[in-house]
Image 1: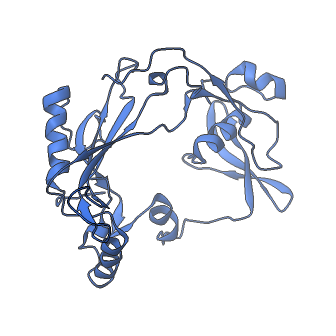
Image 2: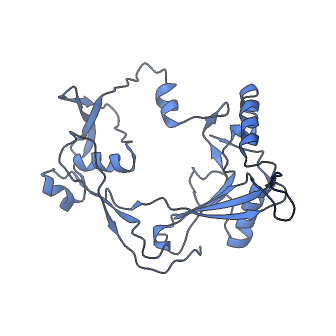
Image 3: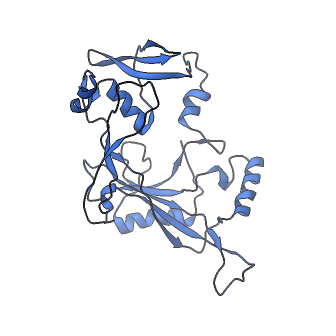
Length: 284
């Protein structure tokens, strides 16, 4: 995980303004003990290329203890005495159990993970009983499912070094190819941001994310540029990942409930939405 130290002045000002206007302190590592705060974006990259979890733990993992199985489906986590001891998989029409000596990590996404846990007997008893699933742990699995809402705003600045047109990015790609990891293409377009809490936040956990995207957008300047002359209009875009309750009567929250007993076919997400009537608000 690295931090881009060559961010634009607009991105730096975004962090400073957050503290001045919202009273939100800056945090050095939002992936650490404290997520809340203004921050410079941290990047999971290597040599200017995004380095995902799959690359880190699978593709680039040379450990002799790693075995990658394809064409196999996880049926459930095997639980003995309240402890996960393995995984039951279906492969080639046959079911077998792979035992774990230390731990079982479930990483199947916002829909897949709760589905696997529920089939394993972890979840709301009333949700599992209808499918004859033995309950091992009464936990709110599948709750708090949210839509990913965006509220973009645009602010003009006069000193953005980047431009938002195809020619500029095309040149950036060529420069990056011959100088890998040392151009603006080696970093995220988002340069700074924040995690903040609205009046709907609970347990001290932030429920809104702010992001600053400094590249400019090229467009003709009325009264200053002719139809054949396009000048860059640098902008700062703040993107809000809003808590669903901030949008008036928006059915954005719900539960991921089990809708079948087996995993013999791909899961069809059937979230049960809940509506929270409220006035739209954006205060923090």
